[in-house]
Length: 291
Image (cartoon, one colour):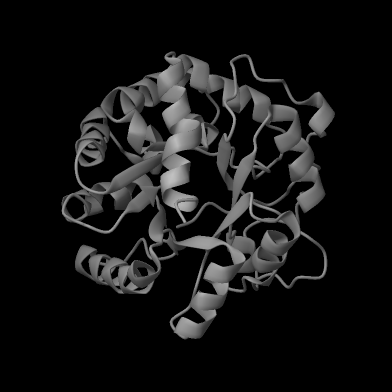
């Protein structure tokens, strides 16, 4: 089941966010943020209350951190209604790209319209499908790849670590490019082991896999963020050119994370400036800005 959050506090003001401790290169990209604006309908029984996280608030955060580019990811709060996503892409302009969620009835004409607006990937919610057999999950992924392939898009997996683990043999042979969110979401509390993470590293080293360095607090939970440093370092050692960084702003459920602190984790995970350049600039360029 997907985690359900009962309450969301106001976001940390941009002026209180720690500035980067390492050089942020030109063209650096935050590949995972969400926004919420009044007037757009939520799904029935959303997983969290309406966050104080507007477009303008995020742009202030990006400016403080020196991030030139950004990728807006459709949150579960709005389901497959991508209206706000498209409006935000038009408002921010070409520095921003989008990751949409779609239903079975989404037409090719709609996807073409999404592409014109700046969408470059589809987000697959595997939390909502966590009880599906592996064969059905693989069929769903293949069907979604049929929608992304003609447009040069990729797939993004929002998935519990247990589902990532179950899909690894299938993903190892998937030729379409895909991104696994939140470092694989491999939480020890869900029974994930070092051997499972090693399996993820094997898939990352070959094939078409990218992993998003985002949401470390989702894995650490109540422990210090330093408890996931070994995971970040292992990912960087495996394939820095197949990693992208995302803030996961506004850091649900409570919104009180320091986005600058999260960006500064890269200095520990990827101490070489060349690796950070791959993660912040080159890999996002290939996935979102190649055209």
